[in-house]
Length: 138
Image (cartoon, rainbow, N blue to C red; front, side, top):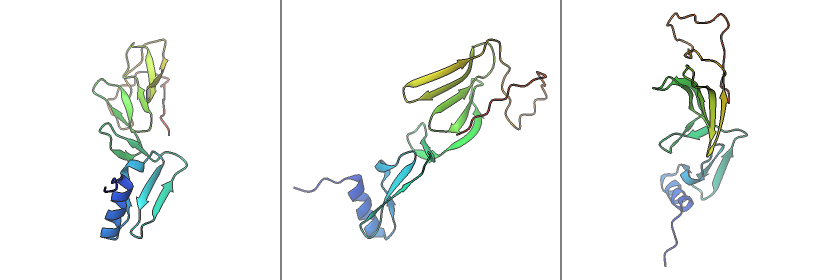
């Protein structure tokens, strides 16, 4: 009976064949990666904080806190470990929503909100004398 092929054994075989270290994809997390080395050993690289997050298609990509506008006018961070969405303005009541796995935290606002402007927006609309500044940080 042949031994079952695991992600680790496949990565190890490929590393030995190519002479280059090979990532063990199934062992990747937000803050660590495991590599099979050509000499048959494994190396785990760990970070104190998340450095990558899953994209909608399931692939891993570096954390990217760049704010982008969605079709509905809301604003979200490009790629983070938890979904963070800022209101697109109006009287919907939601200022910001944070989603992580199956949990959601929503903060409201008692009055109508203006449409958010991102750095670089140049519509010339100076809608308020006191801006509301919301900053997303990792």
